[in-house]
Length: 245
Image 1 (cartoon, rainbow, N blue to C red):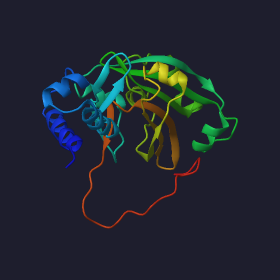
Image 2: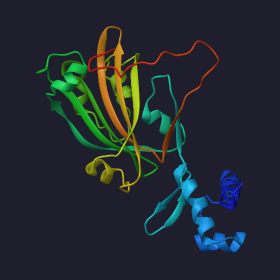
Image 3: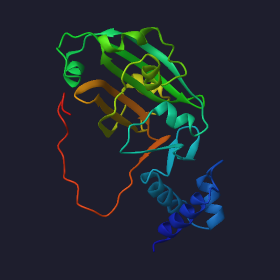
Image 4: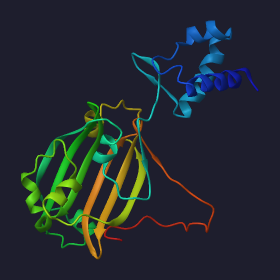
């Protein structure tokens, strides 16, 4: 193995052991520890950066990237419950709680283009630090009782239950990597080079579509996990068009 690859392997071993959770060494400190050239150190760190384990932050040097929350795929979940079940407080700053008309969203909800929609936009924080920008739409007549709810420390699905509104029981979710808009990047306290996930969720109950939701979530604080087993191969699906099941 080239010298830089040997150094990368040993740094990965030390990272896995949690040795650098508080602070990652500077290039010069690694040069002194391993007795190698600065070029070798930078090549090793560059490869670790590419895997997402490390990242360069202006003014802070190299920092370790740790995902704080894991979410299994394949089940309807509440971001609020996922965070709080990990022992971390989830709080929300409500940006908008209003009625809107949006023909594109109405197509997802299988409604007329001019239908009135309930709209909730929040910046959601975990442990006092921003985690996600969450936008949810529901049919206006169904979600009308939610306009008086304080969403600072609660889940949308819990409030549906409290108001006697049916919550979604099935649907689909799509996850894509994105570069957030400048507004969302500022809300999430992300640097320009930092990535995020973009979640799209359609929730339904029987034949009725109840929810369309999009969420921009920090890639350095959240990750998704899928379980699998040996069986029939899954068919490749095209991305569902607006209004699809």
